[in-house]
Length: 483
Ligand code: BGC
Image (cartoon, rainbow, N blue to C red; front, top):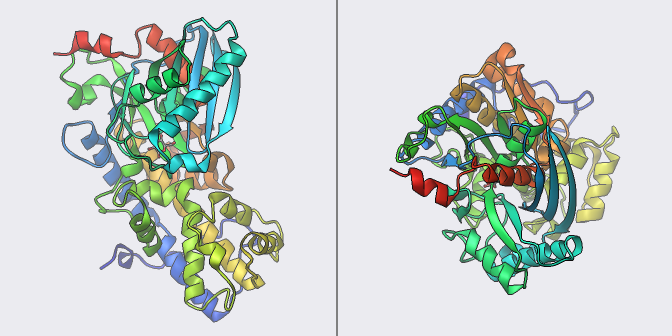
């Protein structure tokens, strides 16, 4: 029996006024099937969350599990006294940024930055091409902003991919995510790879002093401007969270002499939740995305909820409808066959199409993919986007609710960033509705996501400042406390 067989056809309220649709029988039957596959009812949300809590706990022990719960070695959030100027480098899924942040204390800062789009080809090129590109961007920034040339500069690197960290100044890539697939980096420390590239491009006055995940930067930066923030979450191209944990709740770190009440930011790296396929309701489209992925079997949760995949889910559904003779009959669907043809912004645009006849959707499908549609078909497509977007938000909520339950909090302030959170229509409302379904009105209503301060820039600078104060532990510091 499949997971879904256990559930009755859910009665759902449409996510917007006006999405009530009159469809012919064929379209309606297909829509019902999609509704069935993509709807996550409350009891399933609760079961996913329950499993999530046990996996978060397991990750803190030495037992093998799906969620690695990586110690970041950042042992404190800023207390407002941090000051100074720090360089920060941010390699996300789409852009590369080099920044200089003037940390002024008490939640204040100034930032200058250069932003570069990561060329698509770099994501599957060689490791030298990748790191030389990054190092060249750093060099350009330093030459523009520090023309004196000989000043020694330290840089904090926000590297938003799952890494094992033996200290704040080391990070070994576990596996590429977000469409990157470059040989010779997985299993390697990115520190020498980046430092060697700096030398190759002749940028000799910059040294790497901290590596952090974007969620860590988000938490630290949000806590700096909104003290009390305890969790950092990214809902973007990828998806992940970090939170503050007491040292005595992290059994796998008992090889260190550190005070039991000391806290540490833990990078959950929850994109791998349910790689064992116990609880997530995967559809045939999720299975196909996984099978065609360079890392099949990994990042199960992320593949269902992150911006990197939502467009591809829609693309595969549309192709499926075509192959079943439901849509685009006798039309050339070649453009739709390109695996990179559709990104999440397409779903966003369709969800916010203001016209009753979905005129903008019609233009979009015609101009971008050369496909003509009837009004009825467009309503089915829009409803499909709502289903994908709603499922993403509701399953995303499970991770957050699991952190609330794991830490036994009655409320939580969450610094939140990422393109899906910031730009995807209704994502925040759908997320918050699911918090209440899982945790109840009282607690769920006090789980507050707020748009984060620039985590990868300001956060990286603040982590460098914490490192300078001995609150982000280097290899040298850790050697002294290892039992
Ligand atoms: C990466 C995480 C990152 C998240 C958000 C995931 O694909 O594995 O390290 O925090 O994306 O950017």
